[in-house]
Length: 94
Picture 1 (spheres, rainbow, N blue to C red):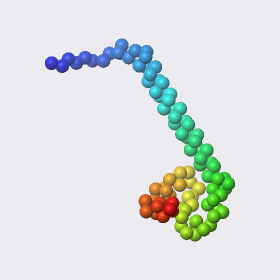
Picture 2 (tube, rainbow, N blue to C red):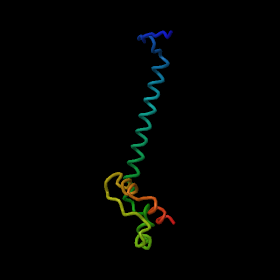
Picture 3 (cartoon, rainbow, N blue to C red):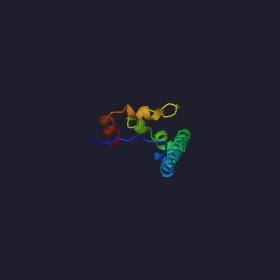
Picture 4 (cartoon, helix red, strand yellow):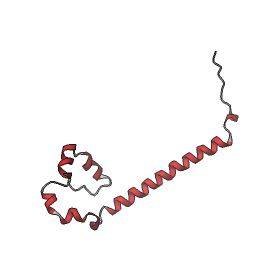
């Protein structure tokens, strides 16, 4: 027969509380790092020297070997990339 017991307030010792706070701190730090990296990436999208190949090499643009240029909205490049199917990716790459 299975016995059951109820949890009491004394079941949480200092080690489990500390481990919970450490986990929450790690999650918060990861979120902050993600937001900082995403902000740096989105802010650097406007720098032309990072995307010089797309601007200088018009033969790739004319041959439809690059996707359309994303808008200025943050993370708009994700929607552009998600709209490209696998066959189109193979044409662009190869």
